Image 1 (cartoon, protein in one colour):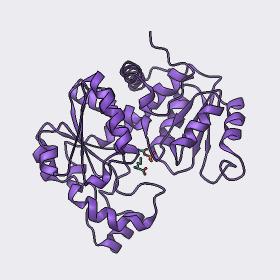
Image 2: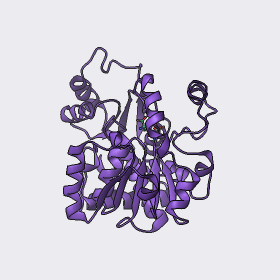
Image 3: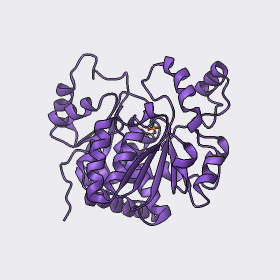
Image 4: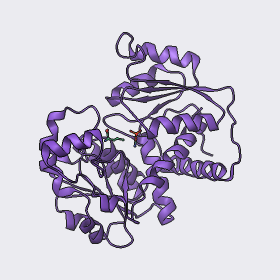
Length: 328
Ligand code: CP
Ligand code: NVA
């Protein structure tokens, strides 16, 4: 019997494949209830605190809607609207919030910060994205893959781009845990940290997962089931890195040729936000400065039948609901 009551959700490495499956099943159940309009406001006396030291659309909205659906209250603490990190330590913040709330979400910088928050909090802490990991995103991605293909084991996921940051790292861990085939297709400079690769290779021995790497786009993505990517410069990184990233990662953009090479059955995934549409403030700036028309994914692929990005985004809410429900 799986019971996650009182557990933190800081990274997928802390969970067994069975526990991950349990959360995915719970999320599918909540999704079904939501679609059918069946109320599930089972936690009317609970409240959650949502700390965001970086901006968010999906994660924040998922936590707020999910909390509301479960009957809970929520407080959003924006990057500049609290004492956290400015006047008050993480340890003190954890003890204060844990005395008022039944769970704490944290989005921010180093993984160490969310780990410290959890250490000093007597209520569950959930990682809403750090530089190193994005575990709630992984549950949404796994649920989406499961919905589409019917299973996870053996599915070949290729990640193109910056594979040593939160999304790339976490997808490698998720694939290792669930017995999938993960290929990082990128310039060597952007492969995950060797220590994390070694950890995943150890997990793979147990689960039957395959973890490999390729600098050759066509060789690496041949016959893949899932082609995934993320933006080339993440939140909190300095603007100066753009030039080098564009130079290094342009060959690893997801284009129609890449999708064709993967095959008709392949799907495209992206945690979002994406620069497929450069008609945004930031997009325009990059377009003008670097003379680029396309970035990590072409508009054609993003808008194609093979793209699961909005199903993936919706699943953030159902899976986050499952995490809060199971751990509170
Ligand atoms: N994918 C994701 O975490 O999106 P937000 O940054 O909008 O929360
Ligand atoms: N790698 C991206 C993910 C956003 C959801 C970032 O950290 O900005």
